Image (cartoon, rainbow, N blue to C red; front, side, top):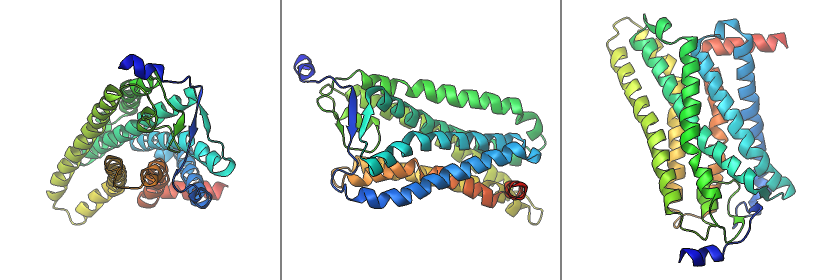
Length: 312
């Protein structure tokens, strides 16, 4: 049976991305809001990075972690959006075989890196509020450097087999019904058995994202418990205020991811164009939202941006 399926495969040097197969007329209308969101995401993250780099008062571990988050968001945007907009504007649907799996690797690894960064940031807030006297000795520049190495190594190594496994498959067609090279969209084109491929992505995805989410929930549970014991007037609001923007972004990131998973599981009941759009937005809205929420909610960043604008 395996030999029979392999004999029907075709040599593939490139894939064709067919965005919104049922509603291709949407592409022109969607290109404008998606372009604006892309410019907003890039502009906001670059502004945040430049502000943290130029403002000496922001040279602290918490803001270094925020810089790492912005770098991940920028890479995710640049991996997905230029190709999507090229399809919308110029009908440039082709993507090379290696380019498709490179895009798949970056999306899988950087998505889990972002989740892991949120987890480290939650730990940072836990130490700051629950152990404030020990904070300077625990959360140091060396801690941030080690955390960054851990984030990149853990998620890069564990997600690397996903595109490698997919690239070894035999393919019956090269038409991907998606705007981007997701593992599920590409593996559906295979003539081979993709059970192990899907199982690996499922186990690794939920292990990485699930463990991060559990640790984030634990951190905030300890934070809430510590804050409720504070008797000083106004201290509770101040302590919670330092975590509120972080919590909003984690909640939004998790909610969008959960909606995307549910729509993919219920694919037969939902038009196929819906999960495709959600997949694009998941790589676009969080990167646009992250620096804006932090810029609005964090006094030091807001002041740094104002100083930067005055210099210009």
